[in-house]
Image (cartoon, rainbow, N blue to C red; front, side):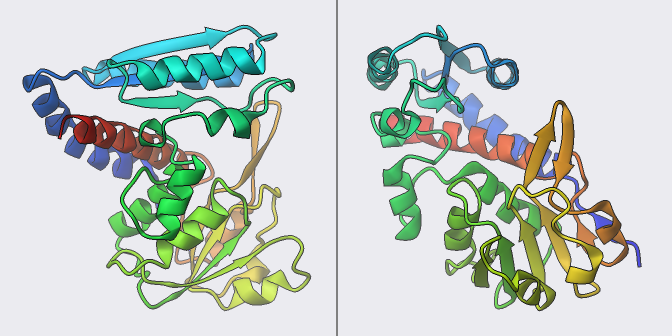
Length: 285
């Protein structure tokens, strides 16, 4: 058996196709959506990531508003910048780039962000909204995973989904998202992690596995039931080399699987822009 590949690119393209007329409508109504970005320090991958978001916003006809603080910025500097973004009429949503330098308490600063402008869906208020199935920005990678499974017509409702990893960025919000009563969710969700000694037992019985532990090569073919759907969402970097949680040999067992590169990455970016456009729509509603 060789798995069917589930690249994220076509999913992202479909999302941006949906967003384009919505952006045009906003602009026609006199409101050009504005994406604010806040970068603290000189981390090169973070700088590239932020620059790419700015370029994409401009390609879509939107406004990009950037604040870049020095490496030695203080907590007060960061909070002041966030407050400026909160108050800015030309900013609908804000990307506060992680990580920040060691002297910055990222979580405390994030708490200062207006939850309605939280483009990553990681503000505590928005995670609470997700837990209660209330409208609001949804964590981007989990939302992208749901969209990816729906795009490739992978049944989720009523099936057992096992998420390996309990992090705040993917594992926990994804469990909340996929357990909600919705045609593309409504699953029986189990969350396991490296602290569970017999975690392979849970993975073996899954119909859909999402690997999000950040442990390279953690998921091996012997852990999977033939025909299972596998989504690789956890990676670690060794320099510029990507080390995914899912070993490539799993392609010989899975029925459908995300590629080593270009899986959930493009869908995460697409969901960030969906949050952005929805934030703009809410502001002028």
